[in-house]
Image (cartoon, rainbow, N blue to C red; front, top):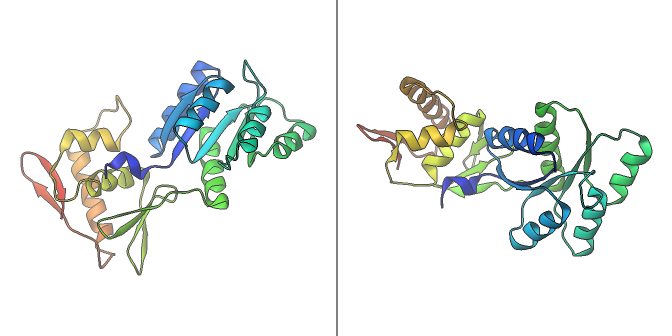
Length: 226
C-alpha cells in the first residue's frame, strides 16, 4: 500500500484554469488526492473510469450546467457527494442545487479554508471519508488522525502526510527527499532540521498509542517504521 492511497480522492470540475489550479493545490496541501476536469463531459468520463470520494463542481461549466451534471450522475446510480461552486447566491439557485442532488453549496468568491471545512463536513455527513488501516493503525485523512484500538490522536496535515508516507512502506527506509515531497507542497523550501522536527513530533504523538510501531532513524537515508 502506497502513501497516496491514504488520501480521500476529490474531482474538481471547474473551467477557470486559475481557480482550478488554486483549489487543487490547496486540497493537495490538506492531504487530498485531486483529479481535475474542465467540462461536464470530461467529468462524466473520469467518474466512470476512476471513481472518486467527492466532486467539487462549478455550476457554470462551458458545456453544461453543473446541476445537470449532478443529475446525470445520480441517474447513472452514482451516489458520490457533490459540493457546488457558483457565483449565484439567490435562494432559488441554492434550492435548485440541492434538488439536483447536491450535498452543499459554496458561493464565489470564497476562502479556501472554508472550502476545505465544507468538504470535510460533507465527507463526514455522507460517510464518504476513507479511513484506512496500516501497520495496525487506523488513518483518517479527513480528520487527520491516527488511532489504535483504544485511542485516537489528532495530527496536523503535514504530520499526517509524513506518517502516511512511512506507514505506507512498513519496514522500508523512506528517503528524506521522499518524505519532504510527501509532507510539503511542490516548490516549498524545507530545511533538513524542519523534517527532523516534524518526525520528532509524530514520534511523540505515536507514544500515546499503545499499539503504534516505532519510527527509527536510518542514518544517511531517512526514516523507517517497524
